[in-house]
Image (cartoon, rainbow over all chains, first blue to last red; front, side, top):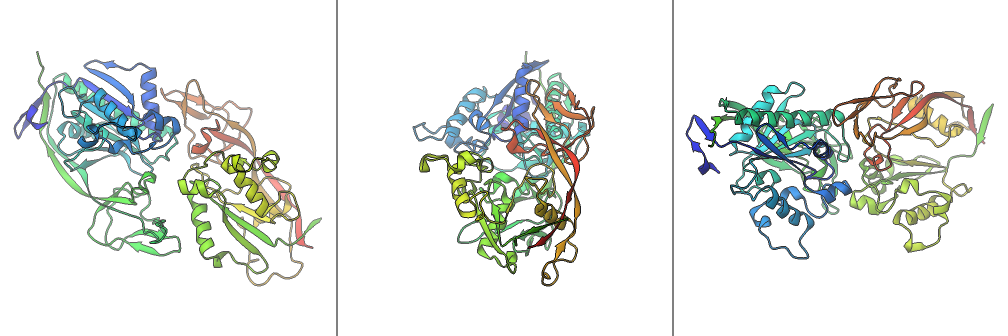
Length: 316
Length: 247
């Protein structure tokens, strides 16, 4: 991806970002994105000024069943290996669907891929408005910076994924960003959460339109979080059932610094488990879908990211 | 006037009636493993997981909602293994803890549930005339010293008044406009005519236009989307329970 742009330390020049995909229902029970995509399809939103928009319901079977996934988490199916795996009768539904989405919105890593893929998610964790993107993506950083500066209804945070093997849907686009809004129970749609997501989607498109019109977006610094490790629930060694819940002092306190000695779990028989190790920031605290992934919460460090100025070079 | 009742000797505590409502599952599993906390003199308490398959899959139900399955038709339906899983379970539970409406049935059943609605701790009673239940509800809210020491023979619970909310009607989501609930987290707060109720996905407000003030509850319960229920309206009532004492 880096090779395509004239990249020097101060400024990046790139071609217009004219094709955007807005995806909802990648997890079928994360309803804000489902209703956002349906509403955009009802209103036949395809084109706004310089940006053409494709809306996609990523996992329609899971949406119908109001489940996260049918056989396999779709948002882990976009690795190079799974995207090129041969399809047999035993191939899980989501692996086939990932290959379909890759053909429609990608292929990943080629010039035909959409310029920006925006994937809409909800979490049961109290994360407010959180943008998630891979660390090498300058455009995603600029979109985050833009949304953070314009959004007054809620604070905006960002999680930077610092990994080389990308696996999620937004990695199919040339640039990708996931909009994660919580807390919302899975299978429920809340007006306040929907409104936050709508505002973020509108600002994302507005940001691209401004870029495409020739404005230079100045570089600068932003704060973001990078995942360091995840912590599982205490479990019964024989049954593997969880034996504790997130401690009330940690519950709903995503992005608040966790220090050694702070309580993290309260066992069902009343004992407190405390955090040991370095000071870090908890995120995705008590995300319902992560119980099966053996994650009670992630721990992240706060980083300051410097990013270059960006402008679109008009192509004749 | 007071009601004379037989001792409540056998009590059951159910969890996992909906397999994804975790508090009840967790508590009942704890008590099955170690029942010390729920033991009381002169009362047999039995903790019980009602829908084990749904609990295993962490889903509300497998074939049909267990908590709607205890109808007379279901409880007497023939067919054994061919019946939906939850109907079989209902018949089994009726055999173990009932039969319903017979003298062999357990005296009290507590069924533990969770909701995605902001209802706090809500006790749900089938009947407004069950004086035993009303007295129990009153006690849960005002546990005044009766816990301490052995219960004297013939102790009477004096008459009391309990505030309750009586279910009026179920309100569905607007279906053609398709909207989100706007009146969120306001269970048990008054909803007056003209107050905002729904927000459509394109931003318009739909207001409540009922004849009078109601108290909504079960606002935005996930499991009720498929039952076409956005919330339930209730009316506030004071229920009077007569004094009760043991026979």
